[in-house]
Length: 591
Image 1 (cartoon, one colour):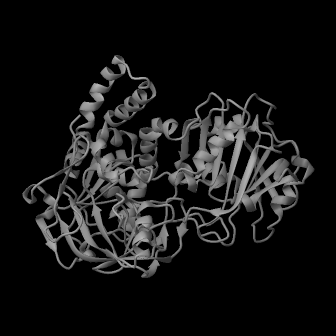
Image 2: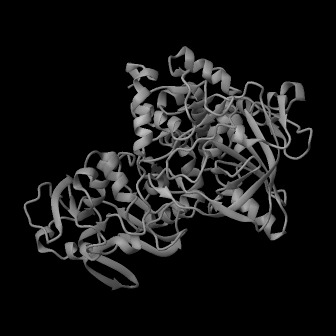
Image 3: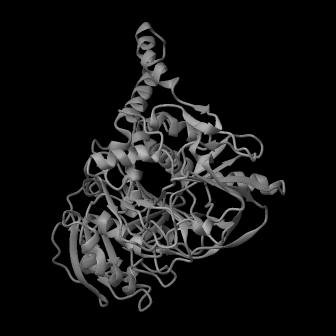
């Protein structure tokens, strides 16, 4: 497979494979492009190249990676094969032998192609056009939802270097445009760029920052990858594209530039300066609120003469980030057993925004070894933001949630196998906790042999304020309740109700029909709408040896709470606007 070193090569492949739709009708980056994108991705349609964008001379391309097919076209199997071979060699290399040395030879040949290389200014398209000062309002940044606080860079590649020389970070931290020369930078907790800024701020220094937009497909995915803090993202970009990443010196000084990006915006993030960033419709499917974040003050901007502006749209799963996340998990999963001993398989679920739900298959060679493996996962990089972790030692694919959940419920001992960790950090975008960045976690284990059969049909009764029972999965009853505002204690009342005593797990929801529409909706409703320390209730609870054990049924209160932010919905005006032209610009085969 040919190495893709810039965006145009990838677009050419998409054209050849009938995976790119060119739209020449004028479209608006304010709400309209995002709604067209959402409809196309919902129908598993192609990448979209909008050539006439209102208010900008730059075309916009979206949905670049919105199917497994397009990810395969972008990267093939070479990166996955390399990682798998590397892990296999690491497992077999001790003690060294002639056989392992022979196996290492092909990997060594590939490894020498990984890294960075300097190119002259004439071989760096990013240097073709300079704006000084920057005019960022000329860029067609998208406003995706009517509740958004403005226009955002939705595929930002934010590059920083540690002020003490401890490496670089390339991360995808959303960028809220304020004006021509400044933006907000959404550096969340547990993120590498945020660590760099914190270190600079302690010295009362500004942190130099470069905002790249576009470039090789490998660069875009590397910024999203949940790598350990000391693994450089630019090396992963080189691995993904299969050759060294071309870099060029900035004639005005500062960070080197990735030579084949579409845009590069240079500047600094001053210490102790904050400004409201957001609101923004995020990948959990809810509206994240405005909070104070650092400010990026630009000095100059470079772009290719024929620059194309790549963007994505996030919202209620499944969106484009779902496919990217799954690809990166498949790529990196062979490394998990090396980094976290005892972890045999690990899956984070894009259906719930990734951080809300993870599952792992682990070794349990001595009593409760599985618990230690779970703690390893919760202590590893961005995985530490996981809200609900399911652990098993069973011989099954933990990516199949339905089979996994049944397997767990057949084995869990509720008095000892559910652990809730209160008063810990929680993902910034998860508003189920008592305040931003604060909440709780849970680890749920189902180990060993099957302990019980699970009920499959409901013939009991429900308490007042409950209706519409649906045994969506064996052992799991979904029940519709009155609103949390009307009866905040309904979860406790339902757990104590004798008519549901046979059911191990009950989900209390606002709409049974909505929560059981599909497995996707079930997972999303379940895991994005409860906080473990506040919303898990048992018929009884006992404290023994400082552990809280529960007696089933176990009720998960997954109703919307008054402090939750609203579910993202398309506004009526945008819906009607896109309705009026959608059939004209999108061929029937993509609708």
